[in-house]
Length: 199
Image 1 (cartoon, rainbow, N blue to C red):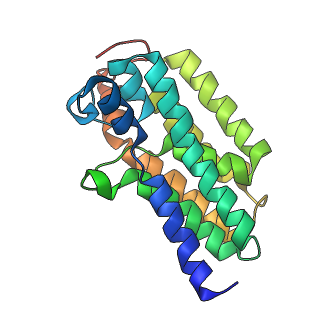
Image 2 (cartoon, rainbow, N blue to C red):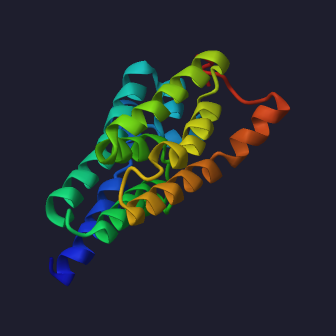
């Protein structure tokens, strides 16, 4: 693999991750700015709460698709380089978190990380996804379910993927948890919105 591919693949992953689907869908349907609604986040949960289930689920699918597509490209063209795949994994999530098209104000990375990691390690990530579903069903806090599932990522992936990719996956999990720090504060104070509550 040439040095050009080693640079181009992670860059392509960042650009794919940076597509702000939640923002674009709400803008196309209502003409409004999702960043001025609800929590101000461009992700699926805020779109669902403020713009309805159809747009919310579509945002979820497209954001997850970004991660899956970026990993498909990385595996297809750089499967021999774990470092390049790892960089693509990290950058597709960073592109979503800090999209340059919205002045580096993006989402929280849950769906994009999930799509990417499901492509890399489907069976272990199904365990994390099942944990997400259980916590969400019990608490109705999407944020808490995201935090718990992200915290489980290092455990479910341990030794199951190549080390550079595993390190990148742990970094992604840490980034997602960090993006939920305000949610954790609201959970502890009892002011966090539960799933089903509309903004």
